[in-house]
Length: 327
Ligand code: NAD
Ligand code: LMR
Image 1 (spheres, helix red, strand yellow):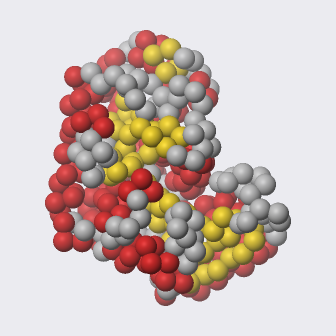
Image 2 (image 1 turned 30 degrees about the vertical axis):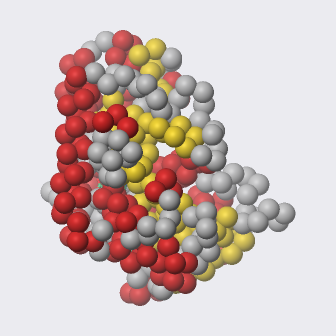
């Protein structure tokens, strides 16, 4: 292996998402086919036996790109020298719950993890929070690691973007690759706003191609907002393989140049772009040059979109107030 491996920490590595995600990372899907990777797998003590089994399976794949695998329930050891920290480990919601209901259970996990990342990770560490409610958990971790620049903290709304793309593609009768510029604004929750006004299908405005505003407002939006709950109802447990796929997509989009004119959805620390509240982890349209990212500029926000974005940002502000003591 000529290149230095990228070291990636994954928390909750023995969980459902972990079981899909680790094998995608190790096979090269996340960082490309010529980039070696090393995995730091983090679990809580009772799950260390299961983690050992997952590590045996990783061994049994003989992945050419996998340079090293370490398992630990010690956060200092787990985040040692990592370039990426993927914070998945936490409790998923059950049927009938909203993601925000998990704040009391999961929020505190992210104080210690933020502190351990700050103390132990590599100087270029970037963190993606997946565990719900992911925006506010990311806010907690970021605020417990104040020496790490705020532009290195992300929460995942890519699964929502991918869901929205497929809904639009299927309504228009085209392949998902035809759908671009799909913004999810705000919170990864039932208030998120999948912005069909700025989405494009085959380069044309999606609303023009679909030509059914009633469907876009009254079916498309709630279907995307409620897709997580629909999966829980159908499967009996929350989305896992599609969530792992979205983690791969998120990191890939941040580390490779965005196609000209397009963008992707990632929740980042707002600086007040598009009149969102500075300091909150808010999903925005993001472009990358492969190294640095920025918020896409001049995306039109009409009155309908404004109200939807404001509602989701207000919910983030409420979540912020609930966890003030952890920041
Ligand atoms: P899971 O219960 O199958 O696995 C979670 C794992 O985390 C378990 O193995 C558990 O032992 C471990 N864990 C718990 N607390 C931990 C801690 N403090 N440190 C390290 N590990 C810990 O759950 P899952 O289905 O893999 O989902 C994980 C999280 O991801 C949930 O909060 C879920 O709601 C969330 N999720 C988010 C998205 C998104 O789009 N942002 C999508 C799907 C799931
Ligand atoms: C999802 O969107 O599938 C996840 O956030 C899990 C959930 O609770 O909905």
